[in-house]
Length: 130
Image 1 (cartoon, one colour):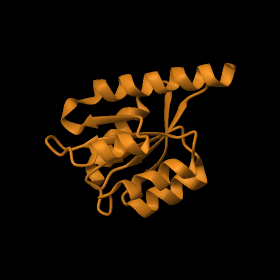
Image 2 (cartoon, helix red, strand yellow):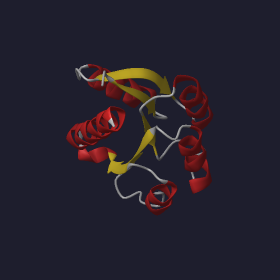
Image 3 (cartoon, one colour):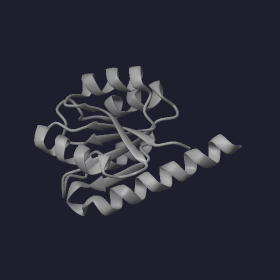
């Protein structure tokens, strides 16, 4: 498999840019787009068909499972990583129930995110070789 194609959906511009800059340093990751709203995320996901969407749980408009689910339904091959603010776990059960691949706290640092992306890449490589 070539690079893992990632869409970053984060409401805070500097956080979105910082995460993008960090991920672009990874040899096996390509940031295909960045979004600042749920509607922009959905449109970009439909158009670009990324391997992974990294979605901030604090994004305005992202308050219920019925917002997460359409993102997952429109691209059945797209893995969704939900990033939460420390102590903000109200979306975790709904996210997991909707099929979110991983729920990570933003404060956990990038190591957990890189680990999750590596596992997703391995899984996608395995699927494509079957």
